[in-house]
Image (cartoon, rainbow, N blue to C red; front, side):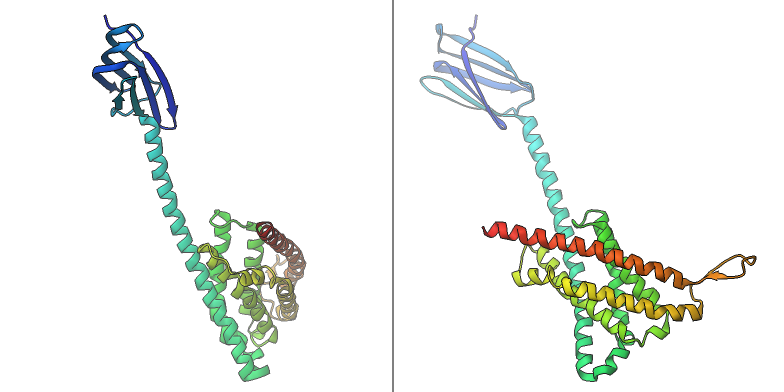
Length: 321
């Protein structure tokens, strides 16, 4: 009757190692059936020269291939756990999909930031060149010359709210929403709907300040998509807003104030009330409320941008130390 040899066990990650204390082993038969290892051999074990065998049941299935070698002192066997290998393969597949998604997301973000950078660069350069060539006259013709591209860029900027909401980029939804809605309100309602505002110099200052911020913000994001950083650009992206953003909000407020008499006179966007009351709510009341909201938005966004700047340069300082 076959005897049972002394067996040592070891396991690391996906591999199982067995050492059978059997010297001068011959006619070795080792095979696996699902999660059971069967061993049979003749050799000199704890009870002398005999036939030895054992079966070992594992908690998880293992691969049927068994690597073993026999020496004068013992027989060594090595197996790989099938379940862990399958998990490993699944993990590789998931990782591969994630890498594909990351590549797609990176390409999308790079293309978006590139288009916005080109759009706002065109606006900034065009306005600067017109200012040098035509001087003060260019201030009164900004809307007719620039508005089409600005409309395109600001409509496209609405995507940034969705990017923040769905986690495509790691940024706050509220600050992004405040900026996009605020700019589009000025562009479409104050400037776009009132022909009298098209020739106001305030349009030049609003557009120039907006583009002055964005020509540094979008290339910074583009380099981020490539895991690249240019220190001067990083500093400008997190610093240029300090003077330009409040000035931009101030210019927007001036535009709103200038539009109030026009809305009062034209009754545009006024809310009609029942005939019994015999009047309507003028849109200018909405603009007064909007001025208050602008001040609140300036505070919220400035605080958000300041925290971003502080966090960014604190991290860079730690890395340098």
